[in-house]
Image (cartoon, rainbow, N blue to C red; front, side):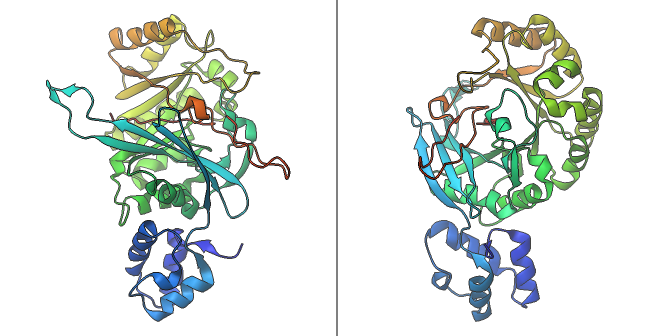
Amino acid sequence: MGLRSVFDASAVRTEFDNSGINTHFIPLIWKYLLHNPNCEWEDIPSLPSAAYTLLRSKFKTLSSTLHSATDSSDQVTTKMLIKLQNGAFVEAVIMRYDSSLGTLGGKPRPGGLRSTLCISSQVGCKMGCTFCATGTMGFKSNLSSGEIIEQLVHASRISKIRNIVFMGMGEPLNNYTALTEAIQVMTTSPFQLSPRKITVSTVGIIHAIKKFHGDMPNVNLAVSLHAPVQDIRCQIMPAARAFPLHKLMDALQEYQKNSQQKIFIEYIMLDGINDEEQHAHQLGKLLETFQVVINLIPFNPIGSSSDFGTSSEQKVAIFQKILRGTYEIRTTVRKQMGQDISGACGQLVVNMPNKRSGMNAAPLADIEDLHH
């Protein structure tokens, strides 16, 4: 257990500094590991000899292993089950989009196949949202920044990743230090992702939202709102009691003023609970002064005992029409991806194997590409 992931940036920098080794070697090490799975420290060329000794004694090339990768029947989604060195499992999901489909201004759209990776930030989640399978696991542990980055390393060997969404297991802003350190690594060499292609989703941790723009400029913020009034929010999201809606809205107003960035609003459609016309009007009034994109998410049942039903397509269409027509708010409906492998929104959960039955990954969390 003593060896850490070499992708734990602050740990590896500290050790290099203390040993007098130039930290500019670190991105070169990461780049080599990215392209050479299963290599040993000795295989990496041109490091000072002290670096090899240090790496051997303190770090692992990867602290996690890809336990399985399951493709959806349409090959659009791949769910990765990743085993951490403490024996726990997390899930990450690759979603592929063809951005060249359709037209832009009458011409074929630029681009082509691109992949979004949905990343987990914790094992389990303490937020307890009643419509999300991850919430049923309870909270087990925070991931280190290296364990967060390693999900990208595993995914990059399967598909070229262009977008990252922190919508997997866990509440990212409850693991703030590891989250921000991981994002800093993702936006530098060798990963070189644009911060504008990274989205962090939160249930609304107010004190963290207040820091977020200053620490992570240009990274997108998505808020799992799911209800237009506090009492419905508390009913389906127990954590909402700690973050009253009016205080959350104040924090988002301040965030938007400082960042000048759009906020993405996620809204899961639960039949008869938050999907009536009155709720659409309440949501429209709540958000009409903001620059937002609302993403309506059809509910994915989590097991046969679910207390919730999926809103009808007609209800979703009426809801969208009110938001667009009356309040002129850009509103999208999430395309369902990965339901057949329990990789869709709200379905990420890992059933821990007992000693005999081996691994059975059951239904988990919140997934999407917000940049198209």
